[in-house]
Structure formats: structure tokens, C-alpha cells
Length: 177
Image 1 (tube, rainbow, N blue to C red):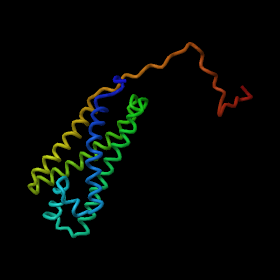
Image 2: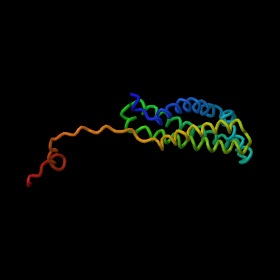
Image 3: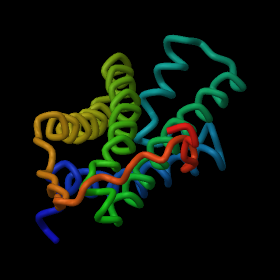
Image 4: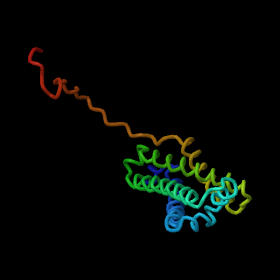
């Protein structure tokens, strides 16, 4: 059983166990109360950057808050699909779960990187440490995924039988042959 788990799959499961509850909670807080949810610690850098540098109206701020919540829920959805795929050994052995993990890592890294840059611009160092940590977790898993060799596949059993004669299109034989 343990021979079918790649390090990137195990690392992805650990990341999913962190990101799914954390980002879901904060995305739902934004959905319930967009302005109050935006001014909580994980999202404060975006809120301060928008108010200081972009001078947005309240409705525009709400729209950006909803966009952030949608992005975080998209990452959560890809991590959930990845977890679902890792439960099946046949999908895990063939690497079918890697695409969902790669999408979660890509979108999550983009959100964390943008939040980190905004936090450094507004001087919010506690939020910057949070986003740097999340970004390093995501990028570390991406590097492990890129470097790790694929699992060795079992070779199919070969038989000495002759292959079946091609009987033509849709199994119908040609009467002129």
C-alpha cells in the first residue's frame, strides 16, 4: 500500500488538510460579510492595499472581496478533487490526481504571492509572514512534484497467442476478401 504513494501525493494531502478548512472558513466569512471578512488577518493586506492605493468605492471593494473568496474556493475545490482522486489506488498509481493538485498549487500560489506583495506594500508584516509561509508550502510541493520521478508501472502480461484477425469496420467482414 505504501509503495503506491508518491511523496508529492502525501505532501498534497497534507496541504489539502490545511488549505481546505482554513481557506473555506475565511472565504465563507467574506461571503457572509464582505467588508468585515476582508479586514481579517489573512485578507487584511488586500483590503489595505485597495483602500490605500486603489481608492475603491465600497461596492468595488465588495466585488474584489467576492473575487478573492471565489479564488480561494476554487483552490479548495481543486484540493477536494485531489483528495477524492487519491482515495482510489488506480488513479493514484497512474498519476491521474496530479492535474488537480497542480491546478490547486498554481492558483493558490498566485493568490498567496499577490497577497504577499500587497502585504509588503502596505507594511502589514504579520500578514506577510502568513502569505510567505503559505507560498513556500505551495511552491515546495510544486518543486517536489516536478522533480519526483513517476511510479514504475507494472508491465502487462504478454501471451503467445496470435492477435485476433481484424474483421473490418464495426466487426463486419468484407465479403470480397
